[in-house]
Amino acid sequence: MCGNPHNLRPRFRMPTRFPLPPRVSRRGAWLLFALAVIVLALTWTSAGRVGSETAHERVMAQAQAVAQGQAQLLESELNKFRTLPFVLAQDRQLRDVLRQPTGAALAKLNAKLEGLPAGTGASVVYLLNQDGLAIAASNWRTPTSFAGVHYGFRPYFKDAWQHGTADYFALGTASRLPGLYQSRRIDDDDGQPLGVLVVKVEFHGMETIWRKLPQRYLVHDEEGIILFGSQADWRFLTLSPVTAERARVLRDSLQFGDAPLTLLPWRQVTGTPGEVVIQGTRYAEARQTITGLGWTLRALVPVAPVYAEEIAETRQASLLACLLALAVAATWLLYRRRRQDELALQKRQRATLEALVQARTEALRDSNAQLTTEMADRQRTQARARALQAELEQANKLSLLGQISAGVAHEINQPLAAIRTYAENAGELLRQQRPESAGQALDTIVSLTERIGHITGELRGFARKPLARDDAVRVRDAVDGALLLLAPRARQLGVRLHNSDIPDDLLAQGERVRLEQILVNLLQNALDALAGRDDGFLRVRAWEAATRLYIEISDNGPGLSATARATLFTPFSSERPAGLGLGLVISRDIARELGGELDAVTPRDGGATFLLQLRKADAA
Image: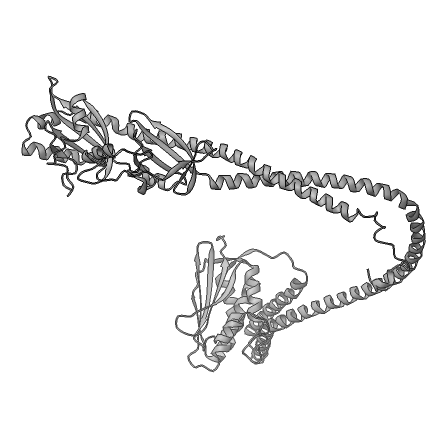
C-alpha cells in the first residue's frame, strides 16, 4: 500500500484494552504468594525423598546386574583353565620324565611346556617331582624361571599329593605376581604318585577390563582378604579384621608375601541397606559367590551420579506438576473474579463501542478515497515502467544485432576481396583473348558469391535459429576450399602452405560452409601474423582419435602474447588496428554448435597453434 500511513489513522482511536477488574488486595496477594512458596517447598522436599528411594532401587539393581555379569565372566575364565591340568596330566611324556629325569628328556619337556602359555592363556605351567622340586617349567628361559625351585612347602603341592587336585591363590615367591595355582597329581599305571603338574593363572586381563569400567570390582576369599580387583592399591587389604596369630600364620606360609593385611577403610551406610562408603566414596554393593573356590565378587557402583540424576528428574517433574496445579487454581480464581466484573462493564463497553464504530467508519471512508487516488497513480507508474522495460529490451536487441552485423561484415570482407581480384583477372584474360581462363575466374566469382550468401545467412541464424545441417564433410575438401580463398594472399606474402598431412578419407560431422568459415578465420589470422616475414610457413594437418577428429593450424609467426591469450575469445578484442576482434569468437561459437571445440594450444617450435576438435563421421 502506498501513501503516508499516518493519513489512514481514524479520528478516534479504538482502545487496545478495556478496564481490568479490581486487583486482589495487597494482603491477599501476599497470602497467596506465601501459600505457593510453602507448597513448592514441600514438593521439593518430598520429591527429593522419593527420588532418593527410586535412585537407591535403580542403583542396587544396576549393581546386582553388573555383579552377575562379571561373576559369570570370571567363572568362564576359570573354567577355561580347570580342564588344563587334567588334560596335561594324561601326557605320558610327563610320567616318563618323572620316572627318569634325564637331561635330554627335561630339555624336550621344557620346550613343550614353553609353548603352552601362548596357546592357553595360562601364566606358567610347571612340573614338580615327588619332593616338590620343579624339574620343568614353561618359563625355564626367563630370569624368574621356576625350574630348580623347591615348592614342597606350598599347599597346592601338599593338597594335590594327598587328594589329587588343589586350588590355591598366593603371591609368587619367584615372580612376585599373585595368581591362582591349579595343581593335579600325576600317577603311574599302578596308581602310585609320581609328581604334581601346576598351572598358574593370573588375572591381569580381568583387572584391565575392570579398570576401564565406571564401577569398582574386588574379589576376596572366605577370610575377607582382597585377592585382586579393579583397584591395585586394595590388593591384600581385608574387609574384616585379621587376628595377629592368623596374620603370622599367613606370613609364614608366604601366601601373601609380607603384606600387612590391614583393614580397608569402609563402612555400611546407616538406614540404606546395600550401600557402603569406601575411602570417602559412596557405593551400591552387590555380591556374587564364585563357584568352587570360596571366593566372593563384589561390584561397587558409585551412587552419586545416579542419585543426582534421579532426584533432579523427580524434582523437576514434581515442580512442573505443582506449578501446573497452582496455575490452574490461580486461573480459576482469576476467571471467577473477572467474570463478575465483566458483567458490570458490558453496558459501558457497548456504548463506547458504538461511538468508536461510528468514528472508525468515517475514518475508513476517507482512507478509501485516498487509496483510490493512490491506486490510479500506481497504475500509471506501472504503465510507464512497462514501456521503459520494452525500450530497454529493444536497445539490448539492437546491441546484439550490432555485434552480429560486425561479425558478418568481417567474414564477408574476405570473399569480397577475392571476388575483386578474380574479376580483375577475368577482365585481363578477356583482353588477352583467353576466354576459357576468364570463364574459370568467373566460375570462381560465382562460387564466392554463393559463399557470401551462406555467410549472410548466419545473420538470420542469430535472430531465428534454424535446424542445423548435420552432414558428413570431407575435411580435405573444406581445407582446400578455405585455402582457395586465401591462396592469392599467401603467394603475395611469400608464405609456404603445407596441407599434405590430411587423410583423404577423414570425414567430419557438420556443415561444410560453417567448417570453412572457421578455417578461413584461422588461416587469415595466421597470414596476418606472417606479414613481413621472408620465411613464413603455414601448416594444416588433421588426424582422428576414437570418435573425434582434430584439425591443427600452426604458423611460425611471432606467437601470442600473454595479453592476447587472456582476451583471445573476448568479443571486440584484437591486437590488430583493423581487426574487430570477432573472428575467433564466431569461430568458437560455430565449433561448439557443430559439437566440437576451438582452443589455442602451446606450440612446440614457436609461433601460434590453434586446435579445432570436431565429431567424426562414418565414411560413406
